[in-house]
Amino acid sequence: MMTLLALSASLAACGGIAGPVAPSPTPDGVNVPPPAGVTLRSAAASIGKLVGAAVKSNLLADGEYSRVLRQEFNYLTAEYELKWDVIEPRMGRTDYSRGDAIVSFGDAQRLRMKGHALIWHESTPSWVEDLPTDAFRAALMAHIRTTVGRYRGRLAAWDVVNEAVSDGGGLRDSVYQRKLGNGYIAEAFREARTADPSALLFYNDYGAEGLNGKSNRVYELVRDLKAAGVPIDGVGLQMHVGTTSRPSVADIAANMRRLAALGVVVTISEMDVVLNGPGSQDERLAAQREVYRDIVGVCVREPRCDGVTFWGFTDGHTWLPGQEPLLFDAQYGRKPAYSGVLDALLGR
Ligand code: XIL
Image (cartoon, rainbow, N blue to C red; front, side):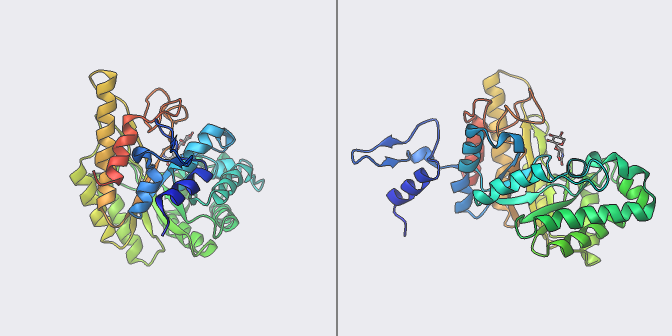
């Protein structure tokens, strides 16, 4: 068994334990992490959960960004680089360079990775809109086959279909639905399974985290796909929430339970918590901490929840600029939100 000293030495060798308190040299000169030097990554690993972040390829060369990423997370996804409009802005002219950069980084750091997202109405290249049905289907299936096949065996999971349920509860009126009918979802999952039989295949959505009309519809969709033998392995609950706008712990837990009972894994796939509400900045940060602790705690206690991915990790790089939704501030300082997640992972 690894001794504490050997463990800390090996951690130091792979970048050290950062923190508000730097490891202090002991009299024998070995850097020993402070007791509080546990990271999200080590805490998650100790309970067999994934703790992930969406990353951007252009930031990986930033030493501080990649250092925090390597130290704190064991799971990665691409924030934009694997979406169809980035890969194939013009028909047949694919460019995987940005996706490749992320996957190479993840491989080099031995991080588990999820691809995101094969089908999303917001990231569909405009040229597909004008294709007749047969050509549309051929282009979509080629996109899935080529993209999943390119990273076969390297990405542990894929978001196959993203946000297909409308806020009103029916299937969203997207170009996919209009051209191919509701069956496009099953077709996409089958194509992805063929392209990489080892990748876990997810349906991913927002606003379906707790119990409501939309989550009922997502539940029915997954139930029907499973009943039809469609190869779907998991459901991602995005979890873009706010300090004053969030589902209850009880509702998230109940929703995860019913999904798990269908035989799928659940994951919190894009969590961030915008800092809103009354009070001082310190009070808002404390409220944000509690939301992170509460919600990550639900996943910790649900055996079929594989972990949580945050939609970035530093407020310096977020799709919600100015709303301070993440775990680190723009200078990579740990926020109270970070402690909230750590507490949840440690069962506190
Ligand atoms: C967002 C990215 O964060 C932005 O950088 C990009 O401009 C638009 O997409 N739900 C999703 C994600 O599934 O793909 C979205 O990501 C955020 C909402």
